[in-house]
Amino acid sequence: MSQDKKYEEKKTSLTAAAAELVQDMDFSIHGHDGSDHNEFGKHRCIPSFSAKEFELGRVLGRGSFSIVYEVTSIDLIESLTYFSDRENLVRTSMKEKCQRRNGDVDNSRYAVKVLNPDLPEEQRNLGREDLANEAFFLRDISHSNIIKMRAISTSSSKSLKFFIVLDRLYGTLEQKIYKWKSKSVGIKSIFTSKKGKNKHLAERLTVAFDIVCALQYLHENNIVYRDLKPDNIGFDVRGDIKLFDFGLAKTLEAKDLVDDTTYKLTGNTGSLLYMAPEVFHNKPYNTKVDIYSFGILYWQICAMESPFPNFTCKMIEDLVLKEGYRPSVMDGWSWGDVMKSCWANDISVRPSAEDLLKSIGELLVEVSGASNFKDRTRSSLGS
Image 1: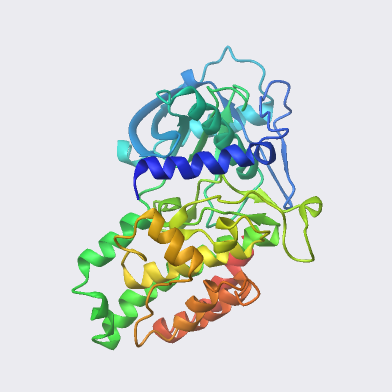
Image 2: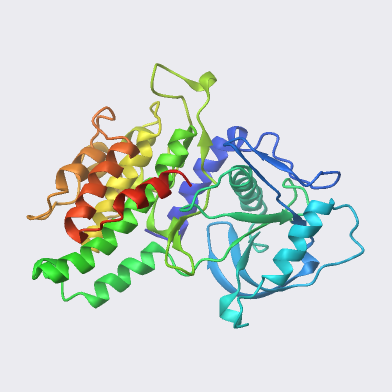
């Protein structure tokens, strides 16, 4: 899919959703007491920094509107006096922990996400809304498989100079799938021996399991993510998956209910390749749109292939989203029925994230024989 088409999709999504994304999102820290209440049950101090306090290194990634840089050092400006004592403690701690112990530049702990300064004016406004929406959600979210926002800009979130500070990630799922494939003789190689099957399949199933853990957390808190795809899933320094880029996330509210289960929300939102049919057709929807996206992604994780290779955007619209074409499930995939239920057109057929955790977890036990799986499950769900 071309970059122009990706931008057009994002622009359409954000233009239509601007009113619902950016309301009361001014995160200017001036006069702040340094304590942010986490409505999910925790309190976190989100400090702020001036851009002048960061030494930025290489570019780690680029999105439709933003650029992500590594932070190589933090030099606090002592003359900035409007921070609370608690904030100053966190700011000092971040300065001291900016680099890992070996001092290697490649081991920077933090990354800064900023608006691309070269964007045309129309795209800048969309990018500002996208970044403000991401900050709005990440200030309260706390889960082991979701990226953590460590700090924000001293500038208002309504400013084009606004930025957020995140934990640094080391590659995306898109890159990981490519590495898996490059190490494999072929898709069927994981079935050539029990040992090989266990080694390769367990790693992929663990990634899938952790993605669903993040989705369950969001869905339990009435948040629909709406942009699940390999490019929005990264890995931290330990290799644990982290869901990031919350620019299109949305809280489900009673005022938007159409019936007992679905909501009137912005249509045509997200990436076309992983977009649920009801979103494309501008129908009411709910968190099951994320389950559809996961079904396509689950296939991609297991097959190590693009789900619709060589498809144009028009082909995806006509064949996948209108006529219901789906990727072929390979013989021997006992989990194929789960995939099919995830990408069903009928949203009532799609499983919940909790159901997916159970089915993928049972498969993980079967494949890897992990004796600590129950502990892992409890840890993931209780993060």
